[in-house]
Length: 139
Image (cartoon, rainbow, N blue to C red):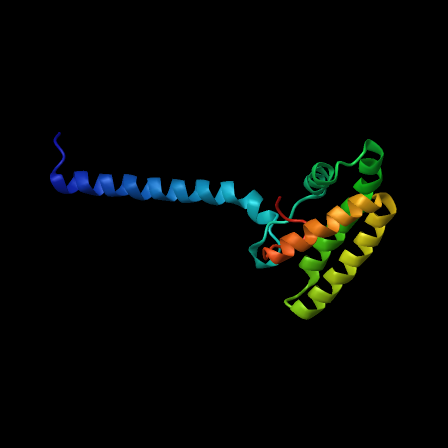
């Protein structure tokens, strides 16, 4: 049995619709892990291991320093995520709490890093801030 031109175009339209739906679903599924790590404002946060690897590379950390910094960074990351989740849209309170957390973290870093490493760490933070990126992001 031959299909009329009208039936063929309806079938083609259905296949195209199905293809678009499948592609949209695949895109949504592939994007969800990245979205799960985004902080408010759409910026992606580094997890504790990524942050530790970044600091290790930037500051040439010793194995002992890595061991000492790991729990500090894990705790900081956990607290940061909690702050974002509980902010409730109050940006001023979130900002104040984030600054307090940053100061606490920097104090803990100063106990582990050498003066030279701490100076370089502060310079990297200032450089990122001048570039409009938050501390702890990117390379």
